[in-house]
Image (tube, one colour):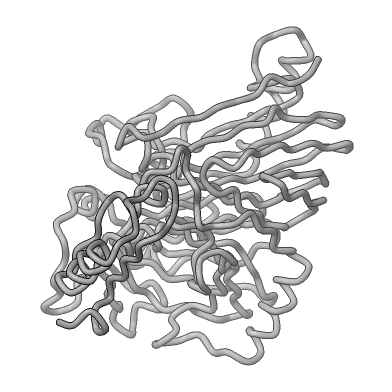
Length: 402
């Protein structure tokens, strides 16, 4: 391979920390290029910076702009094989136009018209849905129909069959979150279409000849799948909720840990009550909040107490009126969505006023501060489990001025 055809470029410079620029050095660098070699001394500043420098940028997407475009897509773009989902991904301006909110996280607004079905498929990417407004759609996961309503958080582990069905007379939009960029970077992804008949949630049988990765959790979940007739219904409570959604109680038939949560719906009434009680306890003089006026909860896997998904952490934060957070930095990225209220958000050197439905990104190690005059509810998801499992997680929090 000649140096002109090589994808490697090594340039001698006159920088103080580089070798003296001589014809011999230039010739050496041309040899590196032809042999596809890169010397560390020319790259160390980019490869080993003194702190994380994410290519992702702080950015805000306005719900009042997203929702009308999703509605237009609902009139113009059918749901079916090929696109599979009418999902519109957030593309971080620092990531070269890729449909990635951060280097590890994917976020999108998904829109389903009345009486419309999104076909059943499965993929190794871990996913969830968060409903900022509306109701009427059921997601069917391995044959279990789960209602989606305002404020609900609905996780779904990778390699589970799932489809969505709008049984109402109104359209509905929600937010999808997945670890697509992370798995894409690792070259670890698998995807499989379900048979055509499964758009109505018909059963959970394997397609003929389907090849699947080994997944212990799938075997656990398949053992608990409901009958086919169950999947055709739209029950008030899903099979998973009837088994798992009892606070502090665990079925003796499911004592083994699972890598992802078996509970398919975390309902808004429970989240709302938990946040309200934290603030009430604080007002009564108890230590119940993460900082004054700041209540927060984490969605957890009832079989382990850990995160709901192996690669994604999800939380809900409530700031009381006239509250401001301490400035915090952490390794790993986050996406927030405003559920209710208004506030002021500062990420790095960028500040926004945010309101209902708005989504914003906090890249790795970018300082985050949030304040509100009238109260603010925020849903958050992050890639923290990845960094914690690799023992690479760090955080720093500044003391709030008195």
